[in-house]
Length: 222
Image (cartoon, rainbow, N blue to C red; front, side):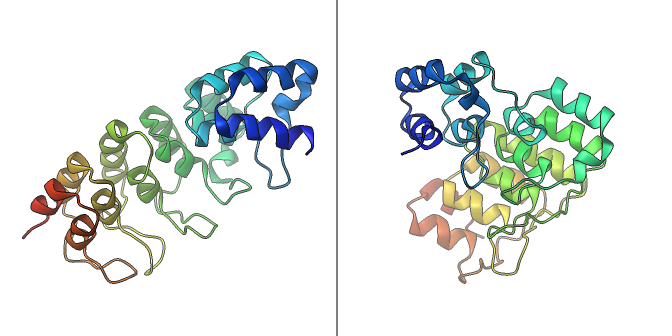
């Protein structure tokens, strides 16, 4: 196992002590990347290891523009947008736009900065997910942040029933799967069509029922 793989393994497992030991032996690893292009900061962010994100930043990690969007580093994001306006249209190595990343991790202010800089609210991710930013926001790991970001995206022109491909899920399907009653209410109030089937033919109510999301299933009962 090489050093990068070792560090990323510790990060995924949330082993801060072991990660710190590896970084102490080779500080350059804070800015290393694996064969897929993933950095320690990005891996820690996707795995919800905020203590490890802080450790990496303390040990010299320098977040890229995409990572700054994922972390909600608004000052860094705004600086890059000012110095390099075309950054808002770039796509990360894993197919996500800056807007997708900020939306997924629930950073409303960062989302707003990107939209103000010209981010395309209807841009489709260039990966197997094929999502719009609103789909990313609805699937984000921080449930309490989802409604504010989704509301903002809708207000800036995102289709409430948006999906990147006919085989995908709408935000309402995602909210039903997660049992997110607050987001379901917001989407319905914004005009989401509860009758639309997902790519595999299920309505949002059927998804909720299948996964035992009883409160959401009741909300979706016409």
